[in-house]
Image 1 (tube, one colour):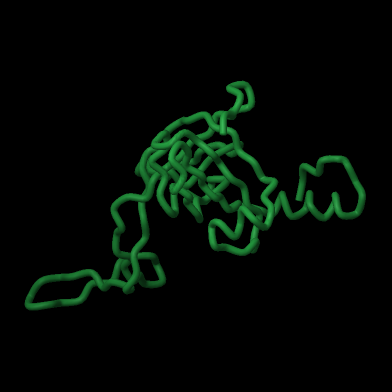
Image 2: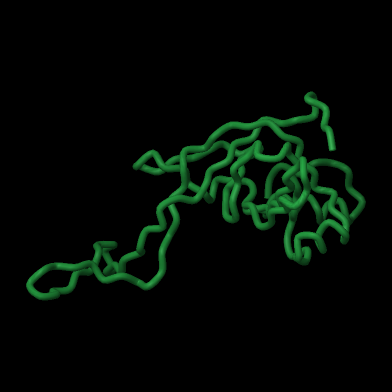
Length: 164
């Protein structure tokens, strides 16, 4: 499936790396330590949080018009706002959980790591069975604006709502 270069959009992706344990904290936000054999060890909560790589730019066309056949191929139901990216085989190294920035500004924390809540989409499905193309199913992360716009469209309004 060939796409015109002029309809490809500039986007950014970030891959999940280094799962780090999450530690229990007190009411002040300080990590709680316990004494194990004379050594101070932080108390783990039992789950991890992923850090993400530096966002990398790419160009691809993105489609949000998915039909039931597409969703069955991924093995998912339409629970949220979904989109799809189709690229040449091997062009993108995306994995489950990768974050995509399409129109939002990339935000960084104090350690210069990307804040994943600022991303537009997360990868929730990958179809790589085709010989020449990879297809990625994306789910909208921050869909409050899209939900408001969808309600306006259901009521017959064609104007774009910019404030929640």
